[in-house]
Length: 599
Image (cartoon, rainbow, N blue to C red; front, side, top):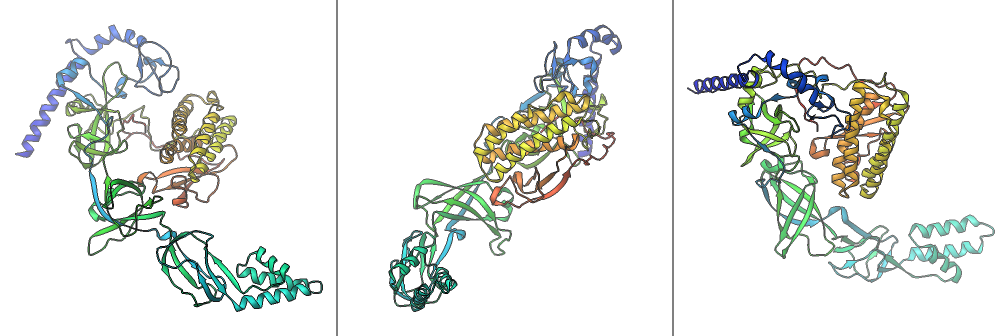
């Protein structure tokens, strides 16, 4: 019975497709050829388009609003059918086609993960205060657990027989320094090894008086965790007096059940509260996810680092946290009614903007989990795109009858497909001057990369501004035809994302834009070649929320611009671009999917 219903739906859709085909291509009962004889010359002379962005359709010549190239008559480009499936306004009304702009508002139905945990000391901020000299403790200036100790503070006075002997040796060596100057140097160094300062040594030499007691000073700041000595104790060199803990930086530890772990990413922010400060909400960024699951609780511990300069948080406090997992601009939601499925593929139809005749593009997307309003989109769609939410099946059936890309005709030949399985190779035909100019852009880019390695947002803004200036020195007239179009597309991406870096001081947003900028520049160097320099394409699989990201470097050593000193050496060298680099031959595009979406 289920198969019978499917057959009825398919036959019904094909019937509608036939009706739309007749309506679109033979509306007045006249052969299509007769219609074009009277109208093609006029329409083609009135419509102007861009060879790089064929979705641009204007009634008069001018510049492309996307890339600035001169528009050309539509008659000089391939037919509209290669852009997308076209439908007249009457046909759209007949088929009840409805569209929705996705991702233009922040998702309100994302999940909020509730977490329980506690505050613990930051283990990287703990230290021990030790005695650098042997001797007996005469006096302690820090006397109880929990006391605050500051770096440079006097913490104890020690009587040291060994130091008394060393001072006698120093004074004796001073008397015979004319005969044996090396002996005086050795005596001074012996005291220095016990961390006796130069000024103290000089005072001993000047006064000729031996000191019996010496002070010990704190090398670190923090709160005393454990007092290990008392007055009268005899200490050996390096013996611990106090264990201290710096509480200005703490760890917030939470337990996350294994089925919730996919929602936890390093770098995400957790907001939490504690009963001791009920009206205060604290924020902490996730820095570590325990790779081992506790076999008893079936949970993993995650760690977030929180600043505690106010001292309101204390180790062992219980806390309650929230991790918002609402979809964002990168993980938007598409309505369930927009989805078409065929085997393993998820398909939607996207309305192509700025077209005189409404046109719709076949788009395969990757989806994640289901929410109340639709499916989370992993890849394939961006904020602001307009998808068909009613009538997508009718459009697909009509496209199939018109021999265009559809669920059943995925492998239709597409002459103007923008994305191919390999990059083109223009290295042989590219003038040396052009190679020198884009190599100069890449050299300026390296300063931006270094700024992000140092996590210096202000330096990144300055370097991105210099990079934009360097792109203005590239003479795009040196490359022609397809090479010119390819460079224009990459230049747009470099300038667009470079400008966004200059407009924000958020280091994470700068790194996000740097990812897109790097992709465009890497393509440019591979396609056109470099002057005489060598660049290494390096890749970090954990960047970009574990989607991975690449960058260029002049050295093989990894210095990660996406994490800085948090994970400075994370990454590998993927490619080496030098004067001999060439892309592999492009494959025949007999099975290329139409896709006008440009990330």
